[in-house]
Length: 156
Image (tube, rainbow, N blue to C red):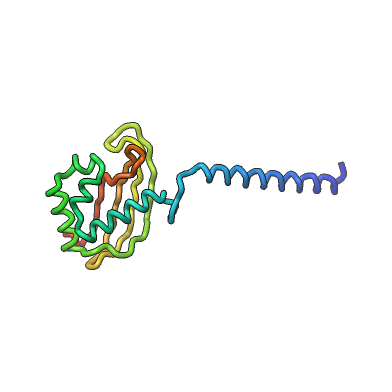
């Protein structure tokens, strides 16, 4: 085979290889959960937005009642309300959030067995800054808030 035929043949092979890889990656992407901004599933992102609205409006009982069983095992309604009031008094409303990390897990054991997401945000509140951690679990096809944690020097 001459050198010119070899170049033409390899060039076609590379094109076919590229088109094949592009097709496979498109098919794999279509099978995944529908992702919103930052690659987080829309359902997860929506739950965090709803939680934030409820927190800002003082709907603490609603948050508690709609949370996962793990939340209610860790705290009573009164304890949960007290924590939210402390956050409100010391930090104020959450403002701008910047996603720092998001991890999806699927575990068959441990405290959070099943499908879960842990999201960490660097958040600017009215009276300080902090890190918010949201732990969400999927139960019966729905995402529920299992834990919410804020770490800030303003809370000391």
